[in-house]
Image (cartoon, rainbow, N blue to C red; front, top):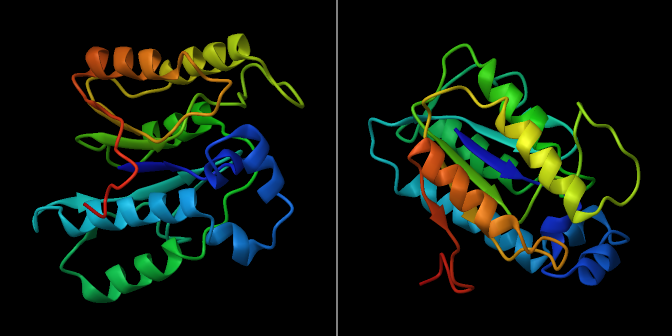
Length: 200
């Protein structure tokens, strides 16, 4: 399962720049360089999956939703050209917005009809929302760490979680360490890609 963050922070690398882009049209938000890089990275990973691999993609902001509406219970194959065309089209329609509720995303994985063999989490920092600890407005790093700890408890057991961590915003200095601990605890990995990936 690919879990892809699509909150407003995915619009740019700094808090101020991401906030400025919140006023853009949906079309401009979809073309924001950081978000384009995220989609390109996801497309690259899909293109490099072994033919026998089955996958699902869930996006999360304040809600969690499958890449193809009404097909969230399915597992896709890269050799299914019709479905892959639908997925690629849909990837380019998603608009980053709102906060990031990772607790809800991990819970969605737990309740899939069939649990995945692994989770690939694509994010740029710690969660900013939690169902168990609801808060409105801006939250400080301490709260985001707590949201992360709460979310972890919703993960199904014995499933490796590998995180692709894009540049974190200035308010999340603890994010790399926490995702490293998550990787170690689940036998996953942590990757902080260079700015040129996946182009090189």
